[in-house]
Length: 73
Image (cartoon, rainbow, N blue to C red; front, side):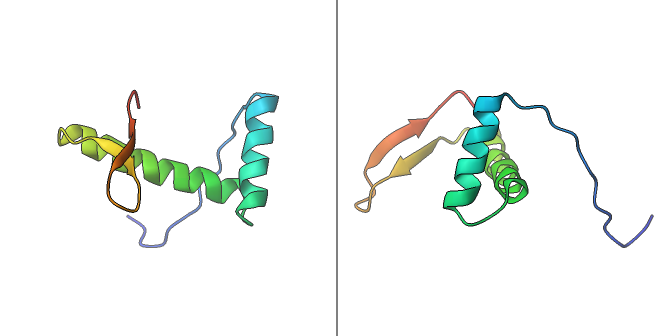
């Protein structure tokens, strides 16, 4: 097995609306669409692990009050 990490290229089909949103997110974050997708996968990984551990995912305010619970992922 090789110890060097090789980049894997993927082909992705998106609706025009989803591509527009991805471009907006990248522009507003001063980053790339690729980086947005990498972060989305990392976040999904957190959600999947939490679900496995019977935990819940939510958005809290600065006083640690639950504002939104993320469900259905």
